[in-house]
Image (tube, rainbow, N blue to C red; front, side, top):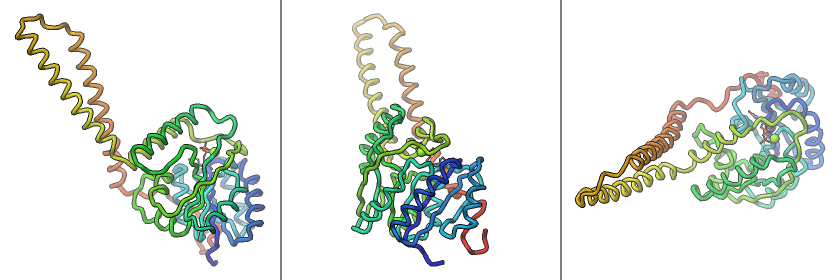
Length: 314
Ligand code: UDP
Ligand code: MG
């Protein structure tokens, strides 16, 4: 099989309900584009009807390639798997739940043809997006930008087009902890942003709860900046200075024969310093954990089976 011009990556975790309607829309869009294409469905260890449905589809569709991961590895790992297997000169990734409208793809392709190597998208929130999700996301990206100086904006979605050159660059990065949004911003190349209106899911449930968002945020920050480590040093300096100042004050009191002050201040400062030390230990632990994960160098995902690759591996 010759390499297609366009690869479309769909990460799928229990999207049995959304799959068919989404594929129908995608087919219409791809037909109108008239580019040779492949659709790469990454089944991220779904426990619903997704695997059977994909198998049935792969049997009679030549443009569909299916990769099933051996368990649920998470959205970012599924995307990495898609990037590893995509062959197109341009690669588009979009969520498999219909929240990223495939109708935007022609615009992404057009911007790519006009010279952009990365076409990012930014979503205008769908009505009904929980307010905490929006507020948390805005706060996180503001912090991320300040700490890393990378141009990441709130609402950036894992819906984007990447040129082959960028895909190869990303694939050559050795890190295990994937925060694709950050890495894409980091690699550079001419990038543009296109806005879209997020849509409600076509079915099923969202799998990113507040906890997942928190984990991703922490992973993203610690993968891209060592400023929090410096925060520990800064706090250390601050409190040493305060301690010296207080010591001076206490000595003065002693020389002047004042009574020893009560314990409130003592207990207060012990508790406070204990808290600060734990915080600093926590920050160190985050980075140590990251080093631990990276040195183990485990693969980002494990493939269980592949369909539609035409190399006898099915
Ligand atoms: N997804 C995945 N693995 C996971 C969780 C999600 O491949 O462990 C896929 C999911 O099927 C969807 C996309 O990642 O295509 C985004 O997930 P979701 O819609 O739950 O996230 P949200 O839109 O709420 O950010
Ligand atoms: Mg979604």
